[in-house]
Length: 307
Image (cartoon, rainbow, N blue to C red; front, side):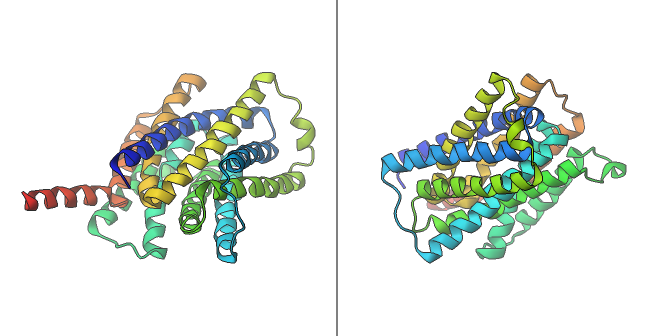
């Protein structure tokens, strides 16, 4: 991959992480004004339709092999249905800033899964990263052993985080032979139908409640669906295809930063000192745990040897 194209990919993924940080705030607004599961189904359907339109004009859709269908459907199950469903449920009772910090563990979880299923090596630096990240989680949820019990909202957010990490592994396998835009379109549209079926069972009055919000809430709904989820996941999945799941997942480190920043600005949330400490520990844990610092150190050593 040429250097110019690489930096363009990095820049686009960085922009998407900023949008995703803002999207956590959007989701907090949406779950407070609309039935969470029904809203999520329609939001993902909007994203799916957006992706299908882009794929149609890009002429990126073709018939899938059985192998591609399996990886895409598993990616949809974990990355769309389970991830977005538990994310909405978690944000009903949990602050958007806390949700952002928990979601910052995605790169670390991706690295762990990479070692388990892709044969990536477990090193001392990665072990240190796992320990630092766990310490970060400890500080996020209060910084004391008396408060170690997670709330139901936090448990949902941890499930959401881990589900997204699992989906990255399947997306990487699917995009080995299939265009990432097609994968995104299929995952979002098919996933939204699954979410809607679940919502009809768990929220019988959800469709009626979807018509009760103000115009501003619907603007947020369509912005979240089209920009953050539809276009955002298309760009992110394209990066996974080009530079790999672990490297792309590293950019998720920026999501909690923007999430916390926008939560303070738009929701007037208060960030506790323990949460800031937790954020620092998680970022350090991710940098060690994903192998990023090892790669930087190795490259510097190679440059010294070649001088």
